[in-house]
Length: 182
Image (cartoon, rainbow, N blue to C red; front, side, top):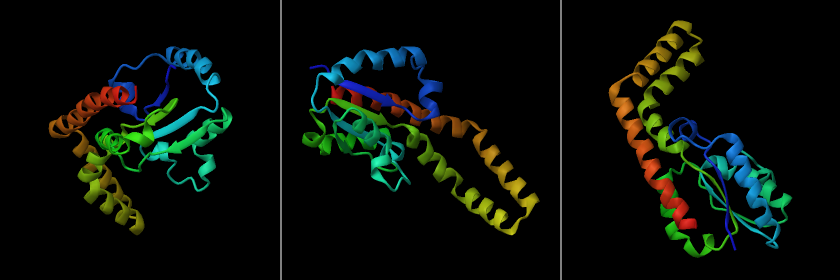
């Protein structure tokens, strides 16, 4: 049986840096695989990834996108997404939970955003605290200065270097994730 993969890289870098297929090609690929979904009863769906896949801040677990999708196709659903995970951490999870994750018919994956965001969070932690303090004091000049500091931090070669490292790691991890699930 052909496994069906529905992959969401809900992160700007996947479309900006990886030359993903055109929207029409992605839709056609998913539509081609709908036939495979209809022949499995009930299809087994596994959600993997980060906070987007997990459904961060969605209190009703039945309203998470993976659960809604699975309900529409009358399938069985398991969600192994982890808030804050990077692509490397997702690979580690795949190796730990091999038996639970294998033999699914559909994988819904959202991963990649934290590869960049976790680095930026470390860089900006002091500026974010200062920005909140400026907002709390309602000091417009202070707010403006904090934003300018953040912009200057983004506009430098060192930042470019570290962001490129994270993008490269994502490029290495993604084929391994797909191979592992195949």
